[in-house]
Length: 147
Ligand code: SF4
Ligand code: SF4
Image (cartoon, rainbow, N blue to C red):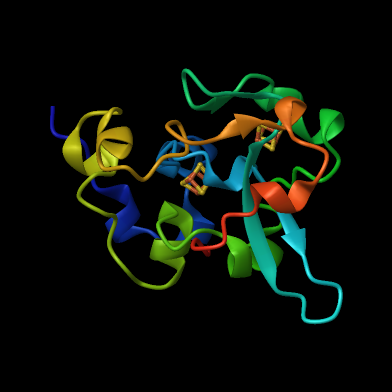
C-alpha cells in the first residue's frame, strides 16, 4: 500500500508522535557535539558524537532515556524553536519548518533507509565517539561544515 505523504498535508504541530518520529532521516548530525562561541553565539559542529550514539547503525542506543542520561540532549519536539537555528540544513524537521520538501535521499521518498548514507549526508562515515576525543576539542571542529 502506498504510504500517505502525511508531511505534505499536515503542519509539524499536527503530526502524531509516530509521524513526528518517522520524519527523522537518521543522519545523526544532531548527535554531534557542538561548541558555541560565548561572544558571538556562533555554533560549530565537531566530528565527535555522543557516547550513546551507535555509529554502525547510526542511531541513539538509549533513545527512550536520552534526556535523563544526557541533560543537554533536548527533546526536539518540545524545544523546537530553540533547536531550529542549529539544526542541520538537511534535517527533515528544518526543511519542513521552512516550507521546503524532503530530499530525494530521505527514506520516506527513496523507500530505503540506506539512502541517507549513500548520499553522504549521515555522520556514519566520519564521526568518532566522544569517548575517543583528543585532549584538545578544537582538533575536532568541522571547520568547513555548518548546520
Ligand atoms: S538532524 Fe534531524 S533528521 Fe538528522 S538525525 Fe537529527 S533530528 Fe533526525
Ligand atoms: S543521548 Fe542519544 S539522542 Fe541524545 S545526543 Fe546522545 S545519541 Fe543523540
